Length: 297
Ligand code: CP
Image 1: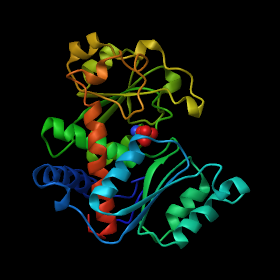
Image 2: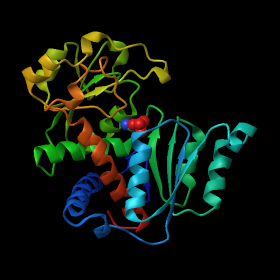
Image 3: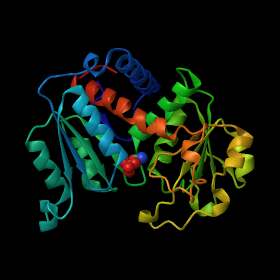
């Protein structure tokens, strides 16, 4: 039984496939019958504990929890928590655990205390972003969005291109882990300083050539909060390039209009960006429901 969603390194292909297909099924059920058809409506309590900022991830978990009929509390780990009085992160996390919620969702930087909590906590846990390393729910919603667009139940053989600050991206790193299990190909395009050093990534230096290879392109912003230098304007997605190659454009967000892509491309007919934002709640609803109901995935 799956009780923790963190790196996904240990999860078999069948589990990842099941999460993707079940998220699509949950969305279909909601569209046909409404949220009441998938609601849990038991007195479960979910905590969201965030040490780093978020809009999309926070809102989609929170919305999904409300729609499932689950009690939800959000905790922003800022100067108004006892961390500011010197309490250690593991001790703080154990305070939340001692209140016995049914599920905890955590966003944080890379920290040994957080990894220890994921290893030792006997309450179900979901990672909502872990430094530069993991963002599993984002990778799931990206793939769900592509499967929905391609009207397929598999991503095997997909050619997925990342452009921008790949090195510092937890989204790219989660895809790196998942691609090896699910059999999709990854490529990256940026200056050398922004590239992942993992060997199974194909490398491009020319955006035109890279987009010619790809089935789907995901643009990533410069992670300035991780000390990254600006990605060159040579890697900005233009309308001309998008229309020349006629492939879907995605972005995990937050996106920087004018820097990551030409201003209006988020609304271009090839953009799946707003569909990604919508699909976040379905993937996260499925995962919360599965972990709360102790379902076998
Ligand atoms: N994609 C993503 O994680 O966005 P937020 O930081 O706004 O949650």
